[in-house]
Length: 115
Ligand SMILES: [Zn+2]
Ligand SMILES: [Zn+2]
Image (cartoon, rainbow, N blue to C red; front, top):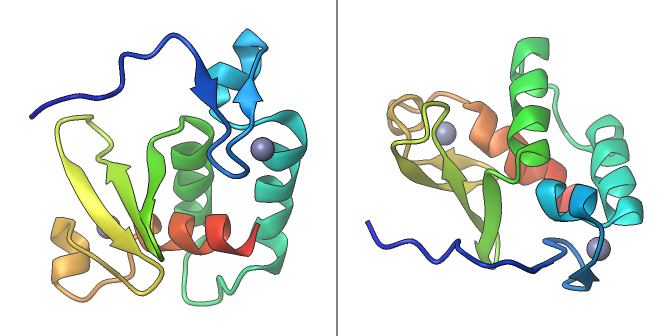
């Protein structure tokens, strides 16, 4: 699978602003955007999800492992880093998502869209 990830600089995944601090680059979000993303987990519609999934979704976001693709669709990296899924707030093509389960990728997409 081709990678387009080998950039030295980075832009905030939420607002697109150039990130300058190493910390922000590692997190893929500027400070204020990251705060909004974290705060969104309180506001987003997460009633369908388990608390452990919320933790996983937050981790996914903090690792920069879920990236906007287009519209409501995100690209999410699997927990072992070997697969990439297309995730949407209400569906996902990971193994669980394909079975109609609510996976934490969907939850992460919701959180990002609510931010
Ligand atoms: Zn930003
Ligand atoms: Zn999924």
